[in-house]
Length: 484
Image (tube, rainbow, N blue to C red; front, top):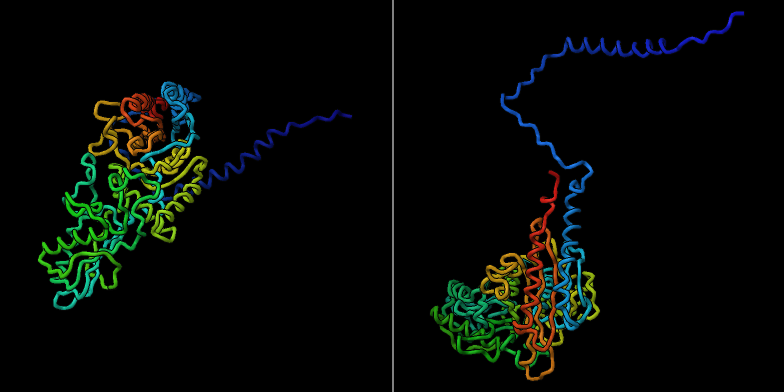
């Protein structure tokens, strides 16, 4: 019997595999023969420069420059903050983050007087509750007949506008003149233009939008009117009738100012100004303020206390049900909690920071800044370092670190001027330091102490902070560290 021979199968398989390929090739040839010819135009002659080959190895950390920049920057900033942290004693605090990521702090949960840094809280809550495009409207109401005579009183109805002013009003502090004002002369022009020739009664100021609490209960006598107030639903020139005359009642003061403006426009008026609630449903004229974002910009740049307190009442009216500070404070506290702000050690007593009862922690203030970070909604309303006419001019003038870079709110509370004595003052600085790659540093620096508001005491700490931040701003960005 012949031995069995195992046949090699591979030649047969190879032939079987080639048959479909030959068939497909033949079909393609036929299709190509009958298909229309498509001519692809040649590119215009020229020299094509090949891309430059990157020298960075494929697995180099430079292939992830964003991560590398963040890590290197945070490490560098942490390492450079030692001198600043050493200057923060047991009565002060500091807290710093980069793009919302915590970097360093000291005494972050210490409850301290924030002074005008309280305006940062008021501003951001107002922007969220009312919206940046919100406007105030002041109206003039009365019964105007066909002869141009207002039968009875003409009512100047306040809409809570905190910057309703004459062109001559330069604000309570000549170092920080107002801007973004709502010019009341324009409203008088509109009334005259509507054909009003005479008023048989008086110009009546209607301030009923808000309650009659003109001053926060916790303000000391040295603060009232000098620093802020009266706070009312109708306020003109911060309750000044002229450069040398203040009004005893803000509504009557506004009525007197408007009476004179109408008389200057040849409107006959039968009686002197007074206050009261409008009894007419007919609007003769009105004037709207600039958007809220502009008004908040002025408040933060000039540290306008009246604007902050009127914003607090407007917040209360819009979301708390009444135009009162109490309603506004309730809305502020609820809003802070909704943002996840740590409320231990936080007491909000007013909108401006004038009250010695206000308390914030650096951790809480930093969380507020982080909430707004990235949107620019708060940062862009803050003064710029060295900006003339702003509270951020002093300490960040041209030639100094962070000039034209830092955006922040200052705060000053002396306290030893109130006659009580023994209470520490405050010097605050909080805001943002923009970075070259589009990110930013969020920071809160609250200094408390008996004489801390004096330059000799707070300026060395500010200088170390500014120098440290300026060096960090100059550190490598993701673009600098990217592949090459």
